[in-house]
Length: 103
Image 1: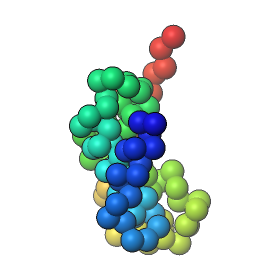
Image 2 (image 1 turned 30 degrees about the vertical axis):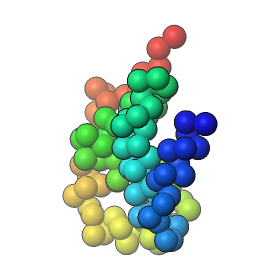
Image 3 (image 1 turned 90 degrees about the horizontal axis):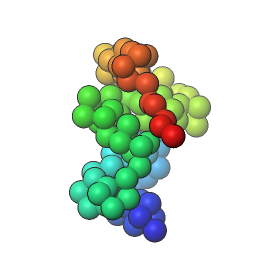
Image 4 (image 1 turned 180 degrees about the vertical axis):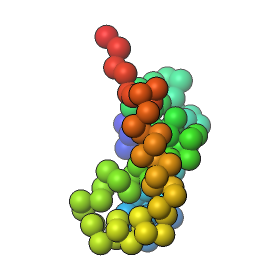
């Protein structure tokens, strides 16, 4: 229920579906989730994604993980956002940023 509510709220202003809008939806989802539901429904993956957003690499991450769905759009995005992509790669491959699942 929490996912569905936040997902629907994240879709409200979107008029198309592509890599940029998908990233926007996911960023709005995080904002919605952490505004109201985080304390009652913690989630380690969303914590990690919030950490990416705080480090300004979440948009590049979103483009990276969905690039196979729209490779031409990703290539075009990467050409105009190479420094953002490089920042993401450096952040994502740094050992201190590994997602650790605890038992």
